Image 1 (cartoon, rainbow, N blue to C red):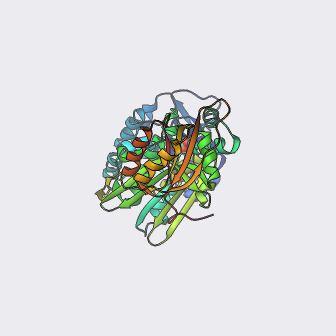
Image 2: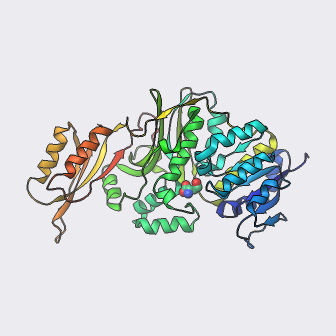
Image 3: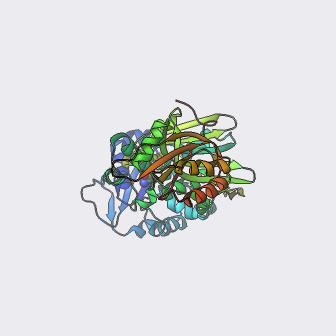
Length: 430
Ligand code: HSE
């Protein structure tokens, strides 16, 4: 057998420890598929983890030392774009390939890193940076290479999906569900990245750049998280025939890209509505293949390790390429061009005429009411929630309508607005 691929691993968190475990557990199968052994030579982590069996690899607490170590590839599993960036740059300068799970790093400076790797004839693998164990990077770059991709949509943050599912299925509070996700090792070090949609926006930027062969600035992705979705919204949505999911959507539009992440009501008839817990799903629509849907675990140690080791296998085989510099830079239109139905939850004083005032505002904006839910107030309450499902509304129209509704004397609190996913035409049904 050919000489081993020597690996230096930085970071022994949930994913790093799982990579070590997987390389040991599946050593023979991995070597057979790679055509040569994959040898974990060095491991660096700021904090030693005596309980992780490193299988004989040399250990060091100096992360930066890996850049100069005697290895062929540095696997960066530190996260963030500080020490991780320094390590990746040093490793490339020293002629080492890089494998990373770090979407924050790629979203911030992926183009520069790819260019640096390209100049040196080196590869950067990043399968693990998006959608955990789903081989979506490989699918876009290889399996769908003959297609012009015009739309991507999916669930790409496992923590958010886990929280929404736990609220829907177990009646958990948001806080309880988040604590569970953290215990299971799904959440980012800073979970606000998950629940505020930042992690999903970074992943969408990485995927859309690949799919549309363009540079996508991460801050051009319109970003909303799940923190404002409450259990009542989930129950109302269900009553109306929808599930609430946190979606990432990117579409080619005239002269640009519409890129956005936000919670959305998804019709229960779509397969993606059934993707629950930590599972992720990515739909890619190509002109030749039509709609494709990839489903799998989107976070967690072993699923993410599966993607990291897949890159190492490709590298060992000599088939891991680095993306070329994007051929174009498309402007991002965020949510500006979106037209979709909306779910509105309007806190209102319980007295005669308030519903009529709400309906009047909607009518003046030519918004049609498709469904309404209103329950009688509890014995002590003086207000109710008016829940309305609308027809299609353009983004600008809903903004002015919400401002007007908020100014009504009978409306007594912030209005919740959640878009209804406009995916029916491109998504497979259940
Ligand atoms: N925190 C991420 C998620 C996992 O919940 O999807 C790594 O990308």
